[in-house]
Structures are given as structure tokens and as C-alpha cells.
Amino acid sequence: MDFDVLILFIVLAVILLSTLGFFLVQGGKLLPKAKREQYLTQRDPDDLPSGGVDTLPAPTEDRPETAEPSLGDGVDLLEEPTVLEPTVETPEPVAGRLARLRARLVKSNNIFGKSLLALLSRDEIDEDVWEEIEEVLLMADLGTEPTMELVDRLRERVKVEGTRDPATVKSMLTQELTDLVDPTLDRRLTVTAEGRPAVIMVVGVNGVGKTTTVGKLARMLVAEDKDVLLGAADTFRAAAAEQLSTWGHRVGVPTVKSDVEGADPASVAYEAVDKGIELEADVVMIDTAGRLQNKSNLMDELGKVKRVVEKKSAVDEVLLVLDATTGQNGLNQAKVFSEVVNVTGIVLTKLDGTARGGIVVAIQRQLGVPVKLIGLGEGPDDLAPFDAAEFVAALLEDH
Image (cartoon, rainbow, N blue to C red; front, side):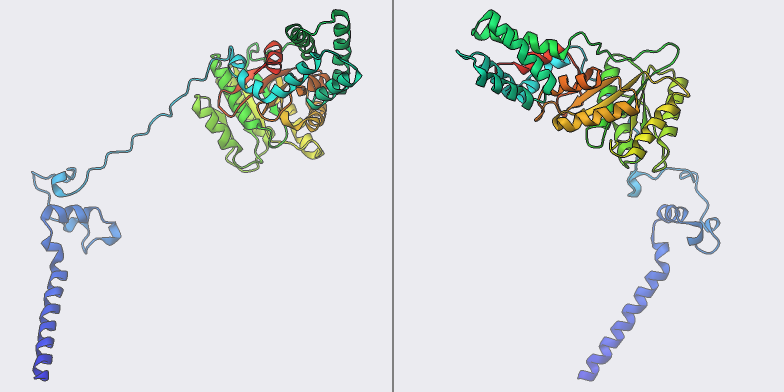
């Protein structure tokens, strides 16, 4: 009995294998004609049956060779991908930006203002109080010389006016601080030039937000209807060029950059200016590599960038970007940069964080150049032209 079962299994296996072989050999003929034609025409030349495509049956009149596959054939029709133009953003108006961002400045500097007002409003202001006032001002990064100057002025006014009225004290302090910040300085950016684009170089050490500042400044200029071109001359940081290009794309601003990692930054800067002249741009902004002020070779490279650009066009602005939270270290950076390139203006970033407002006075005193822009947040339009009166008012805000 077992032998009979074994024979039966062998017979069934032979029949099954024969049937499977038949379908494998004839499988192509089991497909509908149209499907078989479509499948074979889509195969690579070296993957065609013997004789190539010419061995396919001739196309019929109701299904020409060039016909599109239809949904009825079981083939999903794929549309060509639509290349969408990037949405160009509209930056916020520049006018009144500092006023709109004032709450952030109030928050970061409130202790500074409240401390001074509280000290000056005491019933009796003795030497101990004046020492406390000096301490508050020094902690606010005002600097030694400006601090002594302000304290001397306040001493004189308190002595002469003899008032303790909070409103009067605030008015007095506002006036003296505003004079220190110096509202007479020309804080306008040079964004026009006769017969050529205005050229702005942006310099600074690593980590101060330099490339981001260039992007935000491009938005400001676009908001003022300027045609801007960016030059990605920071060729040492791998992501810098792409980062700058992204900022530019968002507001429709082109970027000149090199595809070669570690390319000569002076060459990229030169090409950017040359392209700006060709396109008749209003402003060309050049982002330079972050420099360590104590590395002489890197600082020499920065000087070279400026000299090479000047072979093509004058450099109208050199903006030094400083992190407002770095205090005395920021002052040291500013001094070295000013010796290498002719710094014409300061951009203070991160003034909405733990920064102390006195840095504005200290930096201007040391360099003899104005703070022209301040960064008050992470948003794309959180860069604002500096205004002395608005700044001091925010320092002394009551809430």
C-alpha cells in the first residue's frame, strides 16, 4: 500500500511540473496583445527577445505605436512633475521696526532701567547710592569712561534741580542717556552709488549670526524696493553658501557662489560685484568668512578680499557684526577688525537676550563709528535700523 501511494505522488509531481513548464514557456503569449507589446517596447535593447523590437507584431490602426497607455490597460498615468516657482515673501516695512520690536528690548534691559530709576528716586542720594549707580552702569557694559561721564552729569543735575519726582528723574535720565548714545551720528546705510551698485561687505567672527544678518539685511533692502545681489564669499564653512542662497531665494534675490569647497573668497567677492554691475543691481552684499581676530592670517585674508573687490568697485560700507551679549570681548573684536578694514558701521545681534544696553555706547566710543542696525529676535524681519531715542526709551520702560 505504501508503495502505491509513493507511485501516485510521483505521477502527480510529474504532471504538476509539466504544467508549470508549459506556462513558463508560453507565459508571454498569455498576456493580452496590447500588454505584451507595451512590455516589450519598454525593455532595454539588450533585454529584448531574439530579433529585437522588430519581432513585435505590427501596430494596428486602432492602437498606433505612439499611443499613450490608458487607464483601461491597468496602467496609472503619471503627470509630468510641475516645477513650482518658489513663493517670494514680502518683508515687513522697515519704517517703525524698532518701535514694533520695542517690547523685546524692554524685556532684556528692564532691570537696567528700573535699577537706575529706583536709585535716583531715593529720598537721599549719598555716596553709597552713587557707587551703586556706577556699578549698575558698569554691569550694563556702558564702559568706564562713559559711566563716569554720565554719573558726573547726573550728580550735577540732581544737585541743581534737587528733585525726587519719579517722572522728573526719568526725564533727566532719558536725556542724559540719549546724549551718550549720540542721536547726531549718521546711521544711514550707503545703498546708492553713482553709475554702479553700492557694495557692502559684512564681517565678523564665527558665531555672531553674520550670514543670517546678511539675509535679514537683504530683506530690509528689498522692502525698500532695492535690487540686491548677494555674494557668498564665506567659502570655508560648508553650509554658508547654501544658507545665504536660501535667504536670497525667499525674497527673490540672486546669490553668486562657488561650487568648489574652499574656493578663494576674494575671487567669489570679485565675481559678485562684477555680476552686480552686469545686472545693474542697486546693492551687492558680500558675506565673508567668520574670522578669529587673533588669527593674523585669517585677518590678512579679509584685507585681501577688500583689496580685490576695490579693483572692480569701491566698497561703500563695511558692517561689523557683533554679538551684543559678549561684552568686553566684543569690544576687543571690534578694535582688531577696524585695524584691518575700514569699519563704517556696527550691527549688534542678540540684543533681545541677556545683552546689556550699554554696549551700544561703549562700542561707538571705541570705534568712533555708529551702531546702524540691531537684531532683536530670531524672525526674518527682526533686524531694525538703530534709533537712539527709541532705544533709550526702551531701556527705561517701566514694565
